[in-house]
Length: 215
Image (cartoon, rainbow, N blue to C red):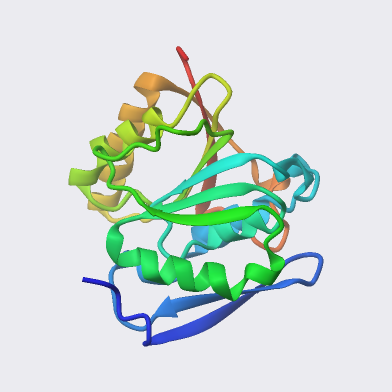
């Protein structure tokens, strides 16, 4: 069943060049229906010197996993990246709405696509980046998520994983299990705060970079 895209409200996100990204969010829904802080932190990281203020994204192929509103992928596409923005079927109408709302700013390409973790794979393309923000939510999804990340990587792929630390016992256990699975396949490096956007960073929100150990 499609998400009720009529019941939305808009969040505006200003880029450093003063372009304003407009993201529709659902008034009622699951975890993917709004813009989470981790998605903002990752999106603004694209505007730092690590990416030459976005220039390094031009013509890069990116897949965003668990995209929700699609904000990370849409902002990447405004820097010229070709982005496949993925989530479960119920979020595709919302992602398409947000792509359309920002079409005039997109200089690369942004396409919404259904992708079920652990089951679906995009086989007709290789990716320079796999991006995910605040996707560590449900224990039953951890192994499928890690499989999906791995399936979309090769030796040249960088995974950018951004998440907010949530200090409940359950969330800490989830994070621990996720990184146990990731550590089996990837080398992991944390992006220090001083390399992140000075206005959109927090000690509670982490950006990690994964690279395959044995591509």
